[in-house]
Image (cartoon, rainbow, N blue to C red; front, side, top):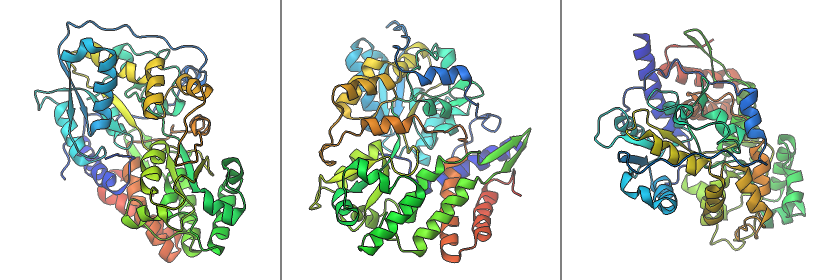
Length: 470
């Protein structure tokens, strides 16, 4: 009975949390929790696995192509990005599989309850179009990867040697109890995007290597925020812009497990984030906006120095929302004060696929094949999860982004990605970070850390009665 109640609580709370926090998505009621989610635990990366992802000089092992006499499979995505990658690039390279692959674009948000429910139906026998392959938004991925709906890639013939050139954090994030449950073709390192014109006016410098010195750590970042305020600018648009860099700074999981007992754990990095939001709130270092709101979007053309972003953010948000500004094309990008990631899409294979060989080969090609990923990076400017492919593009002159004064971001992104640590990720993360917004609001207004943490604990307790909260 405990399993049933726990599964229902996790399912409902996850849906609520996903609606509260952005997941890097381009573009109800939840179904029953996947089986055995409660029992799955995050596995520490072994020395062998870490070694496989550290070096990127040797070419990775190759997977043999399956035959064309297998059964037809269905590939699900929430929008055109993932399914388009399959049809426009995979099938362009392997047209012999055209009649064996049908894509299903659900046209919903990648972190939405609608998508989660649709995929649950498609991998549980409730539809004739079984989801042999499906995309998983970074925030929703643990929900499926920790269930027994998804196959272990090691059982499908994917080896560490094939995935050898991935960035380590992507493998850590998708490994549970020694099983590799997700592959990804994209890495999403964080960065800080800034206005060069404002940098020149306030700091007297504008080039990335110079500006990085003014945002290199949180103490320096805060000092620069005071300089921006003196000149009438905001350092960032809202306090929630600070969230993602702090998330990946945790050194312990949200929930610790001792047998069947799960206990809430609030890492020091969470408290540090609360304290930093209070500093920015009290000193007026932000414009008080909420991420993704109209006022936040408008500030790309407003008195805001910079935005924390990532690979996709650089292309979708900065370039699309600053086109009318007098200084459009005058942005810069630096590493900023912290190493972190934001968003991304993982690929899962349904464990009951009628053609697991072809399903696995799709994931292998998109996420392990260096030449395939090299072409994708060159053509789509999608930062790929393959060190060799990235280095090849860097060696050829990199990518030039007109909106960033033709700056090439690849070396910065590559260096950042090597430092990301997601070993402490849990299935609760996206939900709890959604709840954290209430604690931030309480702390910024009242300045009482204990009271703010109580707000967070109360939200968690309401949805997760089985978690011990001390």
